[in-house]
Length: 255
Image 1 (cartoon, rainbow, N blue to C red):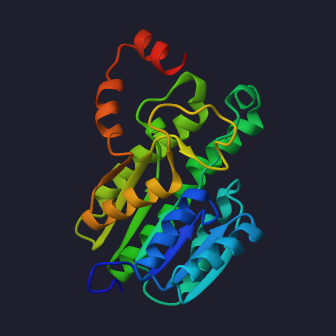
Image 2: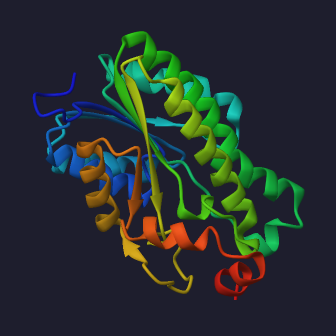
Image 3: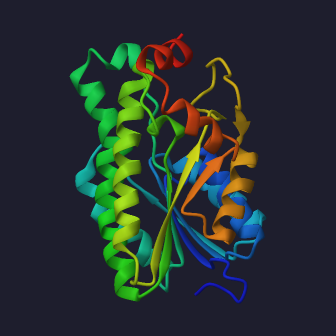
């Protein structure tokens, strides 16, 4: 159960080896999360993340390996992660993502499908099982990593942005469906973040690091913000950008 300060004690992280997820996990552990189950596709990276969690204050960590390219394993992955916790789960973080290469992937059916599966289909399948389990226990929180790219999809990243847009909209409806159940869902919309996934890409305005994102997320969790923007200024930037006429949007965002 969450402690007296509403801080999660038992945490499941789906996509636990991602840079953003690792930064959030460390801050949760420093804030007294004691049991953390990290699920992802790379055992070595999961082991690194588990050691970090222990270094930052967790008393117990476990790992679960899965492949987000195959949505059929989502239900079992969630079941295994909850079983590893072995107690009430306070927070589930969904941080699964694949940026891909738009120029290459847009002409490759298998590659385009992979981007959709990792960014949309697998998370939706996993969220269905997470919802079932948290509603059954009568409480818990879900944190889903979306993207500002979901707000209005750019031509130069329409596969990744389109998948995130689908997930973002679905989660807004899912959050509404949870009202009155004791369970809540919060979305995180990061802008460009310096991670392994974005290494080598040119930086754009408002680019941040993973620690800045994690700080914003922790603050948003404490406040119960329905949508957490990182950095927060992007909420206002996209309030304007999302309404630009098409030709101007393309000139500004896909130059």
